[in-house]
Image (cartoon, rainbow, N blue to C red; front, side):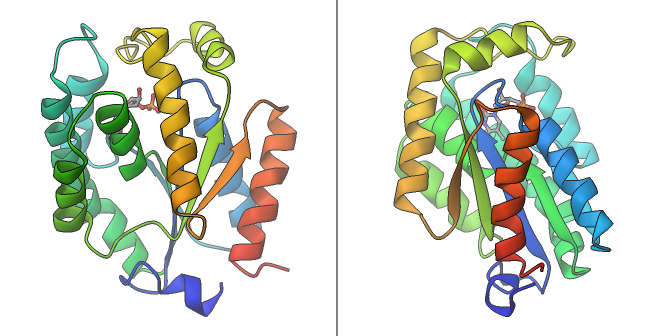
Length: 221
Ligand code: TMP
């Protein structure tokens, strides 16, 4: 692991990687593949997700991802996501980083910026304030932004079984187009942290793009 990057999250010498993007971009599959690959190199990995990743946060997840698309206002969603994130950081992410693990998290703060901020219209000042107070120095060392045309991503989600977790997939198309632009803007504004991954490739090609980035950042030869 590079010494500089390994201490960026200010928690310890663990390394914090987040996966971000719209619906149906293949993040969960790729998170699993990266986890397995890193373990082949003898590295200690914790794979987790948001909303969720701790007992309390998984309870909050059920409130967020099921039911009517208009069930919550975007502000309520922001606060629920940050309640879940606080629990997740306290009980899962920070202990793992402290134990020097590589944490792979499927969605994190950029999803709130994109879904609730850009697409939902929540004030950036509220989101920035929550980031500062709840996340503090535990920001990701590396964020992979999965980019795909929403038409292709949404078509993929319609072909998979995900229980009743379809609240966001049922939002209008314009919502998903705004999300895509927002994630790209986040990546452009923070080029040291974020890398855009073309998710419209075969799973093997996506995995090798990810591996090229991760192995460089972690100084894996
Ligand atoms: P998933 O389908 O990737 O597991 O994510 C669950 C949904 O939650 C997804 O549609 C995006 C949404 N979400 C937000 O709207 N804001 C957030 O802060 C997070 C973490 C997820």
